[in-house]
Length: 315
Image 1: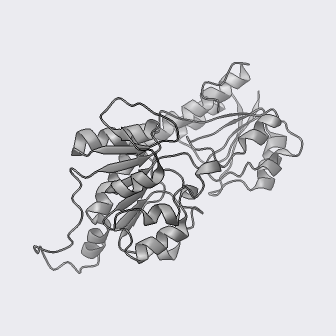
Image 2: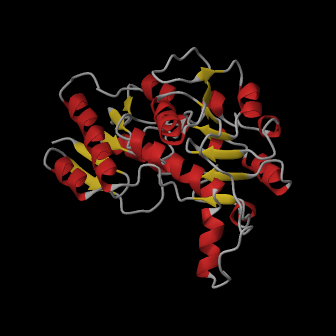
Image 3: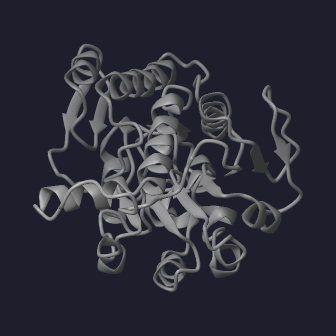
């Protein structure tokens, strides 16, 4: 029986399915593996089911390698040096598709919460400071009919676009590094700057790491409208967090909704204390049904590897 390491607590259904086929070790820690711990895991286990926060850096692959597969729990895998893994003979997979709708739903949650100042409103009520309805109280941004600009038109970007277009009558613009035809009315713009200037609400859905690191920098943010709303449901490193804080403090943009952060779980106090920011604790896929589906997909990739088959979701 192959030895499988699961690096975090997962839903009971996932653990039961894993234990039915593998000799499972599950970490109880609430943090990811360090590079040194990842190196040890690669030496001691046949297969590993890692997730966000586990640091499978290039250094982790420089020792002896027993592991044959890293079946990542999550669609994003910028915490894994895929080139180093492949050079060491370690296959890598992820869990696309099953996360699409849940992540897009969180995108809409952040659009509505940020535009309509829902976070501020709830804090006002909870603090016992609400004095009653007034005609000019907490006026926010009307969402219906606003132009949404989506950066990265993959599965999640398209799911957000559908919700915006069909649900809220929002014209859709999108920026993608390559031509990307989609099955709903939308216009692809030539560059990031053009999208930032034209959109009322900007939603980022690109993969993290690599060339997308700090894709949204001070220059990109300065191109936005002063009334603009910025939403990130991608990865924290896609945004220059310091530049975003400057833009929000200066009133350069109207607000931001963030489900991800540059150095999770650390969220800068400067962000936490701003009323024009909605912050969520990386809830993108946080439903039991989705997490169970993610776990089964990761296991299916490990099983395929164990049977000598091609990984269904290889990256």
